Length: 143
Image (tube, rainbow, N blue to C red; front, top):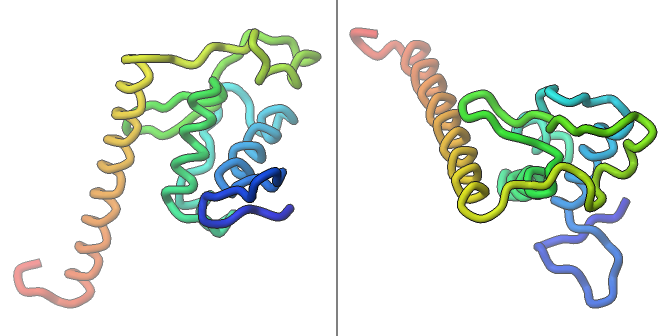
């Protein structure tokens, strides 16, 4: 599949942007049963590697999934497939108007901020781990 670049779609083009491709790929994994309600979605790092995408692009894809009611985030734990009240026969209709409505307004902003905070905390923890590894390998005195 050809993916658009630099966040701009040529006028009249049906070429999806990278974040749209990532979101649609994850939706298809959910529809097919590869990812089930409550399952953890791939991490940002995994998706960045898989799609050769930037962290911002992956964040946009995850925000789109959440906005459309396909995923929920649990601060400090990650993103998970949302629970839907649909029979298996209706799996293709999950993105229709009868699908679980995404949070809107203040609730959506709070959830987005919680997700961003959880990601920042994870990044800080990762950086601390890297610094500790460098310090222990570099033989800094007292460590």
